[in-house]
Image (cartoon, rainbow, N blue to C red; front, side):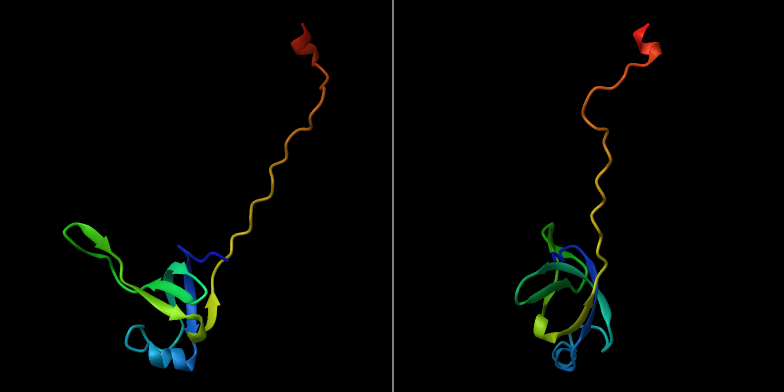
Length: 98
């Protein structure tokens, strides 16, 4: 599942909460914007953008999957296909044949 750009709710393991205690708020579940994810873990946005000389910088934090106890996110189901009329001949209406 691609988590990039999604807001997720994370609950850390006891080890993860202890290790990331200084970088993350509180010990309970928290919400974060996912910037990227890979086999190592999930990169989350941890602050506001700041810039030097007009460039934007976004502070991110890698939360290793070993530190994640639960991750909750909304999933959007694909929309059902739109119904189209069938291919073939259609009878002409009397109005259009006049």
